[in-house]
View (cartoon, rainbow over the protein chains, first blue to last red):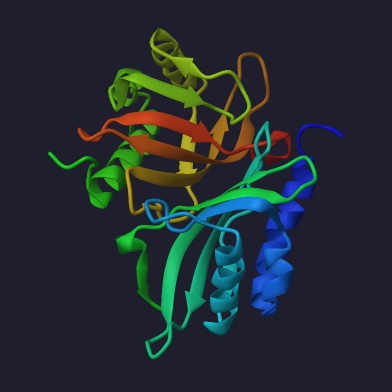
Length: 129
Length: 129
C-alpha cells in the first residue's frame, strides 16, 4: 500500500464529507475519520478526538448544517487536501449563521482523515444570507 | 505585544502578498516573510528558507505570475490564515499554466509570515484558461 491515498481518493473523501453532513448522516461522516483522528475547528480552539468527534458530528447534524464548497477541492503532493466552503447552521435557540471556512485535512494510507484543521476566525462568522 | 497579529492584520498581509506579486515586486513580497520563514509549495515538496525564498519570488515575478483570489481570505482563532486562489504563470519556454491553489500561512507576533504551505496537487495544474 502506498504511504498515502491518491489525490482523487482524498478529494472524493472531502466531497463525501460534504454530502454526508448535508444528508444528516452523522455516523457516516464520523466513519470517514481514523480512530486516532484529531479535529481542531476552528484553528486555535481545543482539539477534539475519540468520542468527542462523534458528538461533534451529532451536533453538526442537529444544527441543520449545510455546506457549500466555493472552489474546487485542492490536493497536494503528499497526504493532505483542502476543502474550501461556506457553511450555514442554526445553533440551539439562535439565528441561522454562516461561516466562511476551509478544512485542511491529512489522510492515512487507508484514506481515512487523521487530522482536520478549520480556517475561520471571528470575522468569518455572520448571519446566514 | 500580543502573541499573534489581529485577524485583520493577517488578512491584509495575505492581500499584500497577492498585490505585490501581481505588481512584480519580488523584494516587497519577500519582505512579508520573517527571516526564519519556511515555504513548502506545494505541500510534499522540499521546504525553502533563507536565500531560497528571495530566489523563489524572483522566479515567481519573472514567470509573469498573476494571482486571483477566489474566496474571501480565511482567518482563524490563532496565528494562522488562508489565501485561496487561482494562479497563472509562464514557466521558461513553456505554455502559460494555471494552478488552483491555497496558501496556508502562519504569522509571528510582528505580523510576518513564518510558514507558508501551498495546497495544490498534480491534478490542480493545467493550461491557463
